[in-house]
Length: 261
Image (tube, helix red, strand yellow):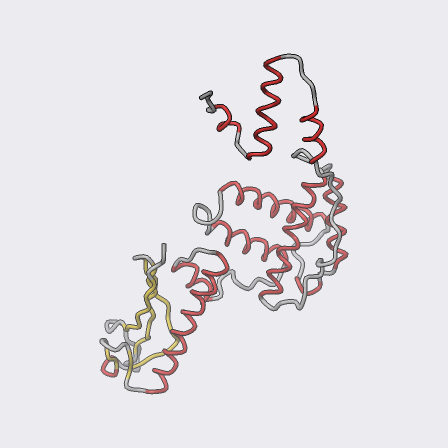
């Protein structure tokens, strides 16, 4: 469902400074929920046109137009990035709250918060909980190194290998290790998108090798099953039904409802 998005510039005539001017505010409304943020501009109450949302000064009106464009761009960017949007997300982004962390653990917390905002919308609660543990292990790793946090700009591929070795010492399975390494790499891609670094230092890093169990029959397996001779009538019927399902794509539940005609 498409969000209803509105922007309104206004002033509070009851709150004026010593020079008689008052702040020009911007009210952002999404799906009936609104929040106000200052534009950084001021004017005299008598200079404000409530109907047009403008002042008599062209310079200030130009600044308000630029501010509107910034809000609209922020709305589009966040919607594309997260798939969901709220007035709190836009306000926090415009005010720079937890949007541009420059250290590894701060960035991990920010990324985790962005996922939490999407729970119940585009993300499942289980996804968030799994990432919480990824954040927890990363914090323990940094602490184990004797650091409180690590600046993103000094991170190299060596950190990837150190973290891999740390996870191995925890006795984790290869697939689990890869999941936590992916979180670390995800944070670096976030840093790239925010232009803190030019490229992901882990882009060419190698992950743990995992054995992939084949969960489907190969063509030759089906051929063997077709050539198999079974004496038991019930087993033979099951074999024929299974082969029939292989060629028709019918699910087990569909097969159970088949009837003789």
